[in-house]
Image (cartoon, rainbow, N blue to C red; front, top):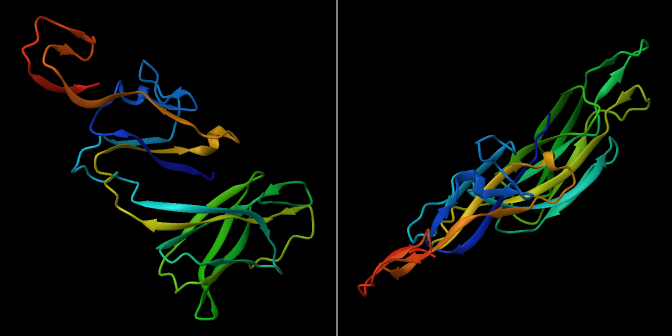
Length: 251
């Protein structure tokens, strides 16, 4: 089984703020809370990290890079490698996402058996194509399977990248092993703290939503400001006579 993750950082407010109203119930993906009122999981494979917007807050764990994905979705054939050019000067790594549309071999009895297919990832280094990754996908699937690899130590820009199919193309319906280059992602390593900004990092297994766009909503207590000392931010009421002083509380 292949798993595709959506990873996003949302800036929700100038900080500092108080924080979530009720834990993961306050994080909604496609209008559904991650957990329900009884603590049962509604949406699986979710990771949430947040910072309330303090001056000296730490970076979000697990969100130390940002990436720009270029979607290709092209079939890779034995005699026709797929080539693209990288020009961005500030990227640190590349993620290649590739796979098979299906992978199965039927024998004369009609049995459907596992099989394998080989790919290579090439980078153009100083005018020469160099094999960076040897890939073998083995197994049996009747649906698309995708995998990813990271390539670092990138050459000076611009340079070419290409996906090469090493296994000969199938010439019979009994062998289904079409290969696809789904996308590549240009990755920049960052350790942003986002000082004075309340941010939420969210990762979720996106395939459970099919073709739907994944939306996010958050139910958080707002900014911490100076309010009258006799003000109750939960009840939103005042008690007694104000003594003229203030206290920090969420709005």
